[in-house]
Length: 292
Ligand SMILES: [Zn+2]
Image (cartoon, rainbow, N blue to C red; front, side):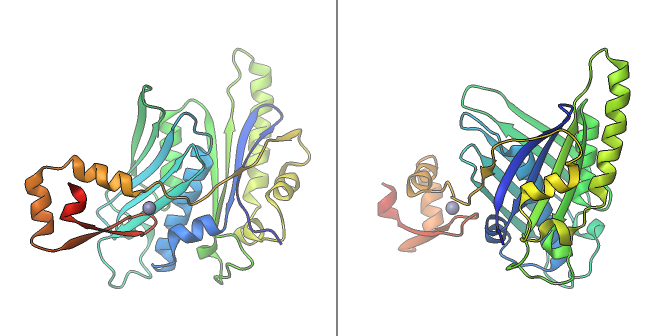
């Protein structure tokens, strides 16, 4: 029985780079199970995608996933920094009768942006795609197939797609991400790699959410079951956490950057105001005096 919050990079035959993600408490603390299953499921997949792409940030780096839409879901934001800390929030336009709505109604006229910010002095990188199709997976596939030379494949799993919500015996969210490295000027090897790639994707398609999220198997066991017949290298695991980066100092800095008349307006004769962190929901109370 192992509840994990892990990302583990691996490699198959030196040709395919992979990442396995399985999250329990880290995902449940972000999702908080506040919305119906269909929305939680999209949120869970967004967290898994973020973890599978952004887990190796360096130098004050932050990877972020942002979806905006005009459907029921207004915003999904998830980010992951170089301290392996992941956070996220979701906001919706309406709460009425949303339980049974399909993906296209939850996210319509949507865009997905992935952003990498590394260090103070390096450039930011952002890519943007329209969200089309029937799932977040479709959107991320479009993203990678339109903007990168490397073939990639995502398989996403989450507890909200299971028949029962049982977080004691299942992980909340997870993913396997695979990338086929291009061969340069080697057509024979390219053919062989393409064949292996197809077979490996077939193996992966046989994996269902019940099996993947079950806590009786570790992530390493899952990898060996799936790809054990290939030469597989499994690298050091990365433990994710929910440590929020918010602080009193950061809030005060935000106030300092505001005009005095905006601050006066904010207080509007009140003695104090509450500032709620949208990620960890911590409440901080400030009087106008505190900001001087
Ligand atoms: Zn916070």
